[in-house]
Image 1 (cartoon, helix red, strand yellow):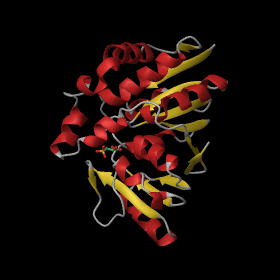
Image 2: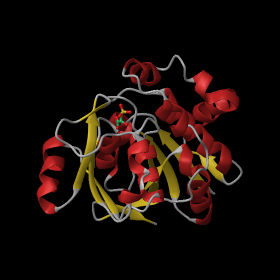
Image 3: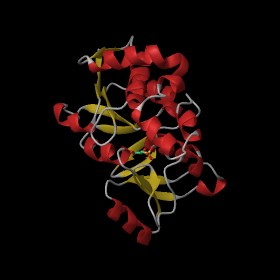
Length: 234
Ligand code: 3SL
């Protein structure tokens, strides 16, 4: 049977051998939800970049530069990190360079994996179906916040474990913890997350509607996958 594991923070990734695994990187609020939304609206590719400076330099190569630090759009960048910025008709065909506080860092740290997929509640079923068909062992890498664990990424991990549970073997207890958490939260995730650190942080920045949107399940059927440093559609 295939195995599944959950890395609750990118700081723990050294504990896992990713070389034979399909890694699903998740940053529910909001990086991977933005990426999935952007692909659902026709972007050509997204280059995830850890460093703000390197991302900025991509402007000279014709990329739209997008990103945030601490939840706020980086001054001088074209776009920030709200999924609502990646829905209009002008998105189609764009090449985007993207840097975020945690999400793109988690992708960077996952390099070396057999495959890297981008997960969110928005494309949960699509990712789950793909993983069911594939023979690869699975590792869900939660982006967390600056190395610390967060609730929303752990809930996504639990949701994915829950959809795959009959077909996979947990490799340690993190998938069981995540699944239990998800089962407690699933009927009202918005309420469950109301006291979570990042929801409070976003609320302080007056970012409210993104939270509810990013918790919507199965709005899109796209799966972004990393190929030679660039996310494209699977
Ligand atoms: O850390 C990240 O990658 C972001 O998604 C955080 S924020 O939601 O834009 O604050």
